[in-house]
Image (cartoon, rainbow, N blue to C red; front, side, top):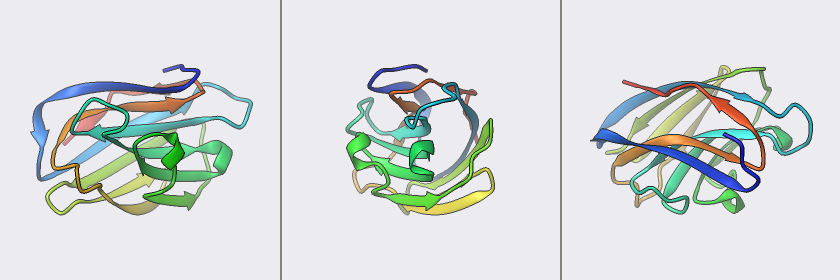
Length: 141
């Protein structure tokens, strides 16, 4: 995924997640220089940037982050100082019914509270802002 602004790539799930799920993927930042390097997993009930929740990496900020909506909200749901690998491994556990989640990125873990309007996860995908990021297909269990 390569965008000059915020970019989403979403896939509608055959069956929405309304209880619990684990999502695994890998991502690699394609851009090797510059401060704007990032990538995130997206979960959403609607296929819009505003209605989505993102959990991922903001390399220029030296953090793993979680936020709802656009980049202006980055880190508002969670922010944790982090180290980075050439290819980040990512696992997210969701409990939509309880509005909680936990993420493990390269062994660094943090918890998040899902937004109240995220009643079910109908879309899963990727997010990047002003950078180039490669993602593996998400595995949902």
